[in-house]
Length: 340
Ligand code: GDP
Ligand code: CA
Image (cartoon, rainbow, N blue to C red; front, side, top):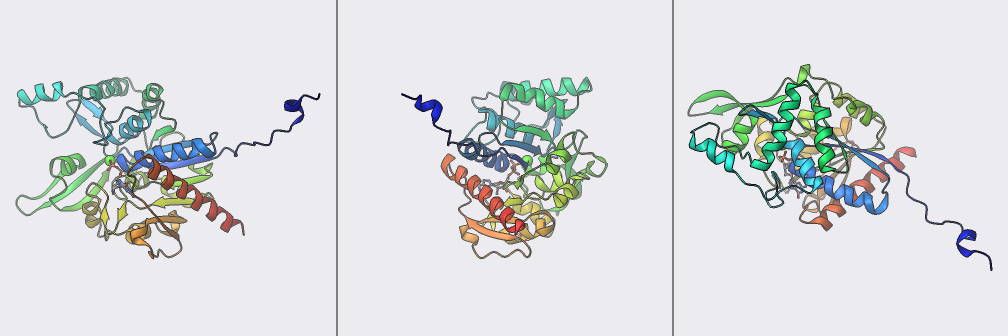
């Protein structure tokens, strides 16, 4: 008898490996990326994902350098996130925060957890030793194994600051986190500034990743203070505009409102309407080829961009994976269109 196994040609060929690049903020980005990794595991396990993370939210607190968006991506994909909250560590305690409050030390409004502090202590020590943020992030990811290559948008310090237009106290400039976490963006912002962005350079690997990408994704991250800040680093916007890879964005706005958080306050500060159409137009055909909006926003038109409606709520693993699949399908469709 012939050896059947040896004689039978292998018919199960693996899907080709692709380089997928995503720009990401914190929660919206991280949750989408978790769905993307699940979708890829099932259909093209050899594909790789490079994440270009926003560092404009970074802040120094009690001497510690905190990178909220990078850490949210790292903890979410590495299985260490507080699921209900969407940021910070699971099983967190706040003994240090409580002790600081007893001393009357300010600020008290930022939720620095004990476990989280270990990450910030290490990062701060390495920064003091002159290690670039991209290398520090790589080292931290050795522990968390997020399944993506996580790159900060820049190794240079960029911080989003907000010029408050407070009727009570007039105009004053505060760190983005003070506006967002302490004031819940209730005081109108006259301006949102990415301080240091104009002088910053993309981190090593960022431009190369976009240049060699097969697909670029803009997850449903905040279009102003997450994606917008990444795009403010000179070279990144141009690389995105120049890539021949399909670029697909997912709307963080559904039915005229953000799904969570106060992205509407950020859009208002820039004079942009809070709608899926307006955010699609903000990116426009210069940056995106495809735009996914929720079924509630079906009929949205963005000139020069292919718009599709799908369910965009990332309520659980299944809906999030389905959203990632829809994003990949739209990218494939756009590639086919471009080839004809
Ligand atoms: P942050 O840095 O933690 O604020 O997170 P991101 O910038 O990555 O994402 C924030 C955005 O995610 C918000 O504007 C939300 O509207 C959006 N978002 C959160 N959950 C969902 C969801 O389930 N579906 C969609 N489409 N957007 C979401
Ligand atoms: Ca953020």
